[in-house]
Length: 253
Image (cartoon, rainbow, N blue to C red; front, side, top):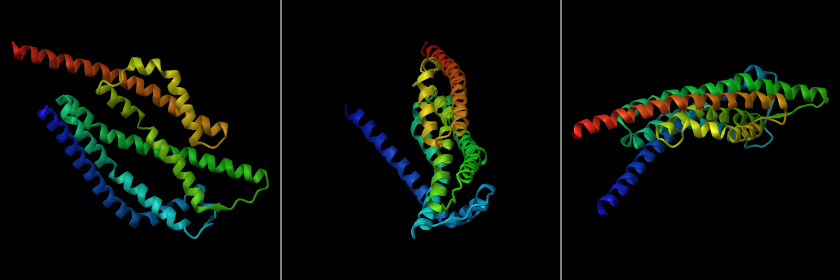
């Protein structure tokens, strides 16, 4: 009992150490974000979809709020690889040797998928939505006054969730390796998963059918890719476990 309690305490201490490391790097990255935020904001304002718009501050605190938000987002993005590595380091003792190597490779894949999701949302979806909104305003003879807070809040609302949603294949592959989900389970809940993704897409996009489809269809494709990846990971997991059990059986004889 004491040994078991010590094991729990050791795990809590290890988790505390990992969290402190992540918090430290996030703090450093956020400080660096304060030096980069103004350049990023100016660059985004000069982009094609924003160059024709005049940004306005409706509140005295709007520029400061946007500046702080960008510093925070930069801090999150830069410290994300450290956070993922610390998560891997915390759970890796419970994995097989081959699984440790494989799951460590999830970190660069996760970063690439996040950047891919952000890029798709910013370069494909966001310009389309902005242009659509401007066309509607012109059609209704409405003079749009764009607030900098509203503009960048909408940008974050559209791009950041897409970066996170693009992590779906990695998350599914990771959970499959841990034995938490199986490809059979993912296939059986496909219609419920589609409904959830449909609802998520509705929250991300404005109430307009075409932009909603531009988000929903890639999410459906991501889910199907996740099932395929889960099948591959599941077969490899069973193979590794079989090899391990055979090796243990041979050594015990």
